[in-house]
Structures are given as C-alpha cells and as structure tokens.
Image 1 (tube, rainbow, N blue to C red):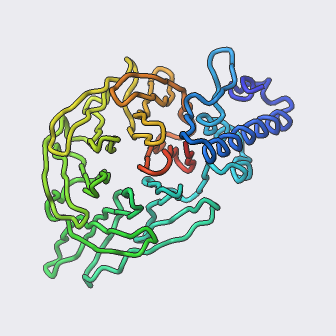
Image 2 (cartoon, rainbow, N blue to C red):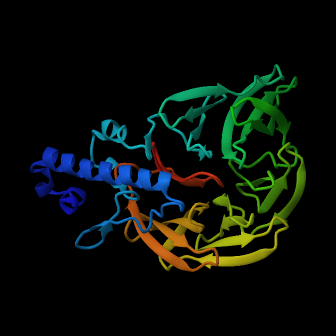
Image 3 (tube, one colour):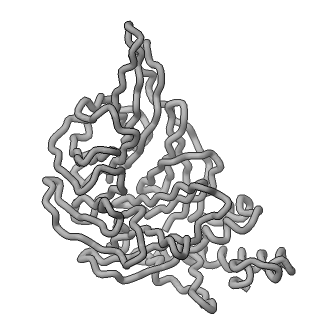
Length: 353
C-alpha cells in the first residue's frame, strides 16, 4: 500500500482516496505513540530506531518520512492538523529556529518574526522601529535561539546618506523568551559585502556567525561585541551548529565532511560523510546525543538523514525524501535546541523530531 502510493504510476490512481485514508491513519497512530513515548519516557525517543514499514527496496519510517506523504497529496494541510509534530505554514520563509517549548520562530518580511505555537496558532512580533529616519531597506538574514529561549536575529539595514549614497550595516536584535526586545547592536566587525549570514548560539550565550564570501568565523557576546575570530576552510556560506560539548560544527567547503572545532578555532575532529553524499545541514540532537547530518545524494535526487555518535561513528542512515521535481529550488534546513527538539524544514513543511 505504501509502496504503491509512494512510487506513483497508474496503479496508484486506483482507489487513491481509500489508500490515502489508511496511510494517514497509520501515520497518525505512529505520531500519537511517538508523542506519548517522548512525553512519558525517561529517555528521549530516537526517531532513527522507531519501527518502520518494510517496503521492497527500503524501510518507510512514519516519523522521519512524513514529508514524502505531504508532497504527494493536495489534502496535506487538513491532514497535518492532526499531527503535533508537523507544521505546515504556507507563508514563504527561508529561516527559522526552535525553542525549548517546541515553538517555531520564523523570520518574516517587513521587520517581524512569526511564532508558531504548539497549538499551531501563530503571532507576529515586530522589530523595534529603527531610530534612523533615513532607513531605506531592512532585510532579515538569520535567527537563532539560546538555551534560555532568548531569540537573536541578524538583519541587513540600509540607510540613505545625505549625499545620496547608501550605507549598509548588519544589526543584531536580541529578544527575551517572551519576544520582548532586550537590545539592538550594530555589528561593525562584519564586512558589508556578504549577501547572507548564518548564526548559532552556544551554551555560554556567545553568538557565532559566518557570512558568505568570507572565510572568517566570528564569536561575539550576545550584546554584539566581538570576542574572537578564526579562519575556516572556505568562504562560502555553510551550515553552522553547536555540539553537546559546546564546539562549533561547520560543513566543510567541499561539502564532504563536518568540521568540529573549539571557539578558539582549534580543529578537534572531522566527520566524513559517505561517498556520493553532500553535506547540506548539520545539527546536534541533544535528546539522543547524536550529530544529525542532512545530506543530498545527486544520483538519487534525494535527501538523507545521517546519525553520528559524538565521536563521529556513523550509526544511522535514513532516506528523508526525494526532491520535489516540480520545484527548481527547495530550501531545506535543520535546527535544534539544547532543551528541545530537532526540526527539519523543507519549503513550507516543518517536522519536529
């Protein structure tokens, strides 16, 4: 049944509604049991070892592979309202984060963040109005959440000078756990040329940043004051995350490995992904103490989730889903929280693991 639905073709069109109803029921039961186990077990539930459905060529995993079902049915919006671990938000957004309460914080346009609560209700919180009267443009770049649920957002602010020229600055906004503004800082140490910024926050509430076309990694206080910087192995924008040991994890320049280094820039270890895989994103699942690497395999046009031990041994490899052939480009990201879940977002679908 699952194989017919996922593989498509003429056969999948026969009794499609009945087949989908059964599949949705199976997913709903698995998600409900997973939620129950996560809530009452003394240990975090491992999505990699949750029972799967054996198909001819692989195993379908109801927790990890929900995205595959969503891409193959137009009724996904109604369906996911039943699932607490899946969020469908039709507002386009490149960047998001998650806090300890499982709330999704999405960057929006026009100077705001949108918080999606566990009830799936949402609320917008506006950035403070810039004090400069000559603001020409403001673009949100990235968002991160620390262990105390403080939220950090980096924006690109353009002001128009008296002589008609434009002045660009990166600005750090810090919000508390209730999304009240704490402080605003200009990041004068960042080059004004990069197009994109990635940020993460470690256990000491240091904000780590890297930018496109810049080989430096910046470590600054949560007030925006630069503390230290070091050189990485490339200048492209790569995935950035923090390990359980408070080390910095960055995808290598060639996307063949994950580099793990201290905040002083000392390389501690390198995790190489299997041949044919390209590192897309990396995060640490604090609940099960695993490094989660999201990879892309070009020959299969598919994404995989790889689970590594803290010492770098590959323990799990799971097909996450195939790329949507109807979209020339799909944003995909993975984020985690020290006291909360790991979340994987593909376009407008976000799954909590």
